[in-house]
Length: 347
Image (cartoon, rainbow, N blue to C red; front, side, top):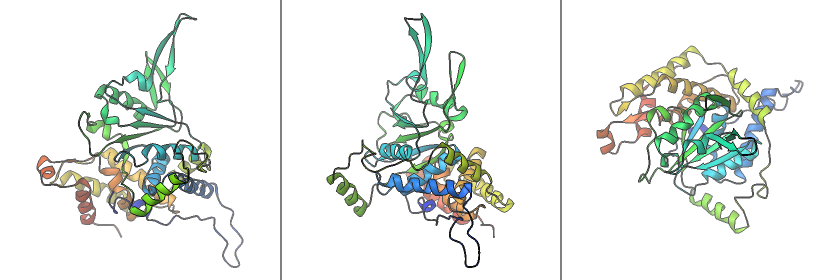
């Protein structure tokens, strides 16, 4: 992940319920302040188990605030599964992991009807999608039919089996992973399904100092399967998350910022290197994630910097490079960076 892609972790986190000024009475923290502090504490808790992935943790928190899904891209061994488990533990949320393979069937994900010999009736057995955070590991290794079984769950928050719709728990998001290097035997996600993901986050290899810290923890007995022993504790829950979502909904967006978001999105449709630009759904996603980041940063209004910070993770999977651009070694993030540099910023 480039430094630009990491920019949404570079802001200073605000907390308006701080100490009182001289001569002013102490101001009690609001429900919004308490929710923000709880979610920022989540980052600290996850850091007890995962080293050097603060950008991804922040992206996952933004996705939870917006109720959106995340596509995690990284080579094996960068703690994708551990990150999701740590986040779930710190937020007191349920999580389930599914290893997507070529022989995985839709019913293995959503659930299926099972014949009960005692009652002589068919009963529904819930699949792993009935959880708060579903880790879809290597989602591009399963055939399109099974990939498509997630579409209804991701978009409608429900599963339909035998003509009956069954609602999923709330909150519910999908964190799907894919290997950015190995493509043999994979089924690339179609544009319609990629567009359902709110963010695409790249999980880079750790730096030297971070990797030393990783192996130091393991040398001292760290067990990634025992988060409790690692000191990860629940510091927030569904109530704090809902309060945070309510607060994000109150973040104001000036007409100039709305115009800036639309200008950025429309510029992707005219970029010579792209054969596919960002859809209106992408513009809405950029708006929502910018509001969530503004709130996490302690503000109740969106700035152009918020939009810039979320543009790469929010838009990079919604565009398609032309074949000639791919042959020239052009990277999506570089084109998006050029667009952000060229679109006039409102003052």
